[in-house]
Length: 302
Length: 329
Image: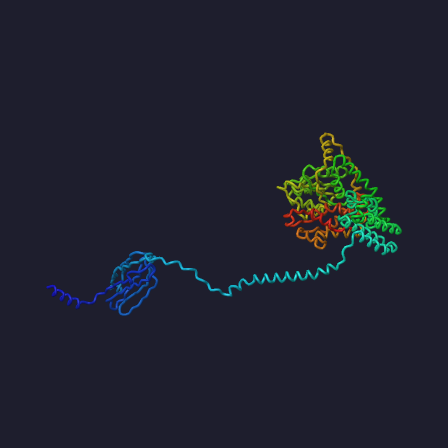
């Protein structure tokens, strides 16, 4: 009886017009987060009727690409991706077959998919830490630091040159005449001044300028105070306050004051008196010159 | 001595009696401030304004007031305050309602002696008004320019402490003062006299012993004081040593000096040295005059650098070093 009914149905089905159908296939059915999924919506039995495919609107699915092709039957393919884990189902979507009053809306089947996370597999044993990788020695790396020894060598060379130059210049310095003792220098300069015969030539100002310079230089070198940078007034205070021979105070200061008059006030002294200033200079230098220790001790004892 | 110089010296000896009169009068009320009084006289006779700097109570104001009192001249004292205006110094135009005209009201600058007390307490615009009058010797009110009386001398005081809320004078303006005199405390015996004198109620009066014409006559005489070319060269050496110390064996000063002394320093050194020689009754300048007056002329004209300030080197140290290094002619 059952077999008879089946055969009857088959005959009736074969005699009827083919009915349209749509299917949705999502593959693979199991994937990892971010893997691409392929969705194919296929319409069959549509004949020559136009098919309007839907676009998946489920927010969990992200459409990466749309591929459309029509070969033997109407088919539309999408490339999708999912970025959450769990079980998702692409809901039924309407497919419109035909146009106008003949239009027919068919619904796709729901398409499930399982998305898994990509967590590392901790079940496996940890790998041992790798040893440091040995970097092979390269001469090129050494070149980057070559400037340090080069600089050191250059410095050494400069120092050596400087030493050599200094050594060469030292003998020259040794040839320079040593300074005469203050009194000898003063006597030499006073004699030179006398030989210039300034007064006879009417050059009294020049005479007194040089005379005061000689005497100040003698004081500066003999007593080690800056007499050349002192005014006569400063010298007066220095000679009065310090422990100096009274001859300097009583006899040199008037001579220096007279020199100031000639130098700065157009004072014209008696030219014949200039020799007296020279003699005074010799005398003061002789009285105040530094004596050898033995002579000074004898003088003190006497 | 040259006949001209001998004659000048004789005239100076006669004229310096006037300086003695002034010093005698001021000596009635001032003790132990001879240095300051001499510098004020140098400013008076060399026609240069003087800035006195010292801590309070050193008789700066009293010295100026006393000096002015010794002369039959118009004296004005202006207390510089932060709210002072230029018009308070130079004067202003006032509208006369009766005749509908603007009339000029002259300010206190129209005097022979102006004491600008605590000059650094007034704002820059007031200082500028004063310093302009000092330089130009004239004042413009509205559209009219008025020449100032002769002699015209500004004696300003300032306090080196309590700098908060003050307006320090810019270098360009301090340069207008011929001398910047620093006042120090009096010696013990002088302070004893001060204590005794001012603890009594009756302070002796100061009499006017000089007239402005005499001051002008002395100024002319001071201008005749002989300055030898050697002295001029010495002055130039000193001034140039503040600008190019390395050329005078003073290389160590080079990083310490920001700006050297201006040509005004050379002019004022010579003028002040002439007046100093006059006070010493000489008709010629000697290096001692330059040395004596040099610090007061140069201390505010040599600007020390940041490095010097960091090393606590003052302009006075620099000037001293220069004087102790430059050979005296």
